[in-house]
Amino acid sequence: MRYKAKDIARELGVSPAAVSLVLNNKPGVGEEKRQEIIKKVVELGCEYLLKDNSVAKGDIGFVIYKCGGEVIEEYPFFNYLSEAIIGAIEENNYKMTMMYLDKNMPMNERYLAMEDFRYAGYIIYAVEMYPEDMEFFTRLSAPCVFLDNPLPTLDVDAVTVDNYMGIYKGFEYLYRMGHREFGYIKSKFPIICFDERYRSFKQCLKQAGLVFHEDYVMRVGYLEAETEKDVERYLNGCQKLPSAFLADNDLLACRAVQAFKRRGIRVPDEVSFVGFDNRPICSFIEPKVTTVQLPGNEMGELAVKALVEKIEKTRGYNVKYKIEPELIENESVRKLV
View 1 (cartoon, rainbow, N blue to C red):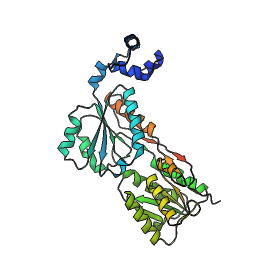
View 2: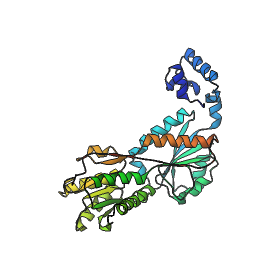
View 3: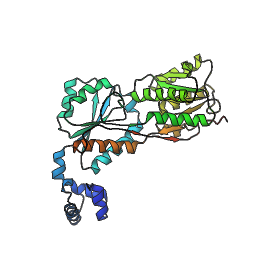
View 4: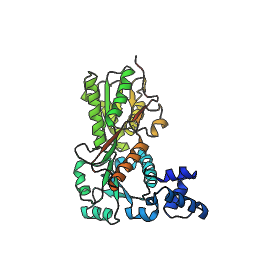
């Protein structure tokens, strides 16, 4: 058995935080308790947890890759994900350094920023990344795990949400509620996970024997002012509304709900909505928006697990984890049958 800090804490009946302080040779634990923890570490044969061994392994770099930044900068899911990653990294007795990397930085500056600190490995928050951005990361000597982006055409370690299942659960819920005319709110900002969700929407229609109507697709800008303007333009030009919309994410769904209400269109009495992400905004507007919840804790923990396996050479091949999201029923869907 390969022990972790939480296992030592459980054996001794102390907090994981106290064990972490001792393992990393930091103050905050009394000398008697410190020696008790060190003795237990030796008894269990897991001296590799002590700082002298873990320092040699290097830090883990948590890289936020930005290509415009519109998605990341207003994405509360990123905060939940970060907390899970930090906790899992500490449990594995590594340290984490967070850094931002912009696509517009010259290649040599990006390379120096990441290699200067001799990281043991990297978790790349890649929601804004496209395959053509990968050339830089293939030149790094340390292993990488890509997070929140399936990168379907590349053989890399990646952890992402199952976008098809997320859309399917929203679609199937609307279908059970009697809806047969479906629209979709599609972001103009190019994001792979958004593209996957849109393709999944069309696949769900096909599997249900329903017709895809281009006129029911609302294409909107990602910034708030752009979204509102594009929703207004759509409403001014449409001949008929579907009974329900799914959306790339909650932000677009909630903005559309508010725009529809300003036009006197009742939600959900006249049109129903289902978002994606389970952002706090879903509970702040009226009606509360039904959505799909992303599994942030599980994604963060799996990303660290996958990276540690590569760093410690316990796995020599690449893996892709897809985590299934859950439907969160709120008030934005009307039952038709």
